[in-house]
Image 1 (cartoon, rainbow, N blue to C red):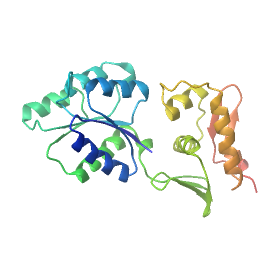
Image 2: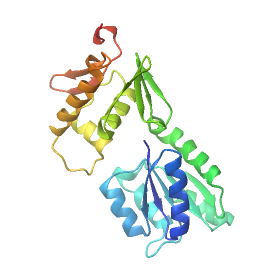
Image 3: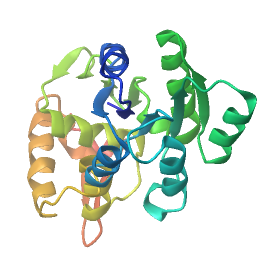
Image 4: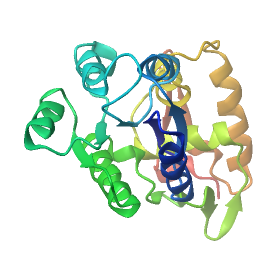
Length: 233
């Protein structure tokens, strides 16, 4: 599930965007100011930001420039959503680092389409399209995992972990990498906690004979493999 931060000081507009995004399967956080937006980005790096220009205190354009100049947020996808519709404003917003520029009043369907387009370019693995590796099928839209029609019941953390592993199959990921990509790089938990969630994920996958697809690479981390040797009979 993709995380979207909506930075908008008009509560009615923020709520409209939020409702439509959640209905489309996104996880949404709302910030009403640049200060709050920075706090949310520092807390958990989102997959994309919908950013208003006119904000209390610092402007959205200044905030976009700030993010582009910082290593951690340099590649953060940003869509400017603003009433400023002059050509010069659009140029200023895009030059500040916005990946797209949408003017108010706006179509929520168009905004959703633009969000998906930016995510396709910037973070293909964050899209809510179904993923299939070996016999396992994961559908982020319905939050279901199955093998040959048999559903696997997963908690939200194990679902995110499996989603990440399935979108990066055969690659070894260290505990710190999994912590950054699945939990967020500003979530302070012990790396060994990841072992607990991997154990839970394996236990759930064991019910459909796929537990051995999650391999432990000694001294390196974990990977998901689709090799037939990893599948139980």
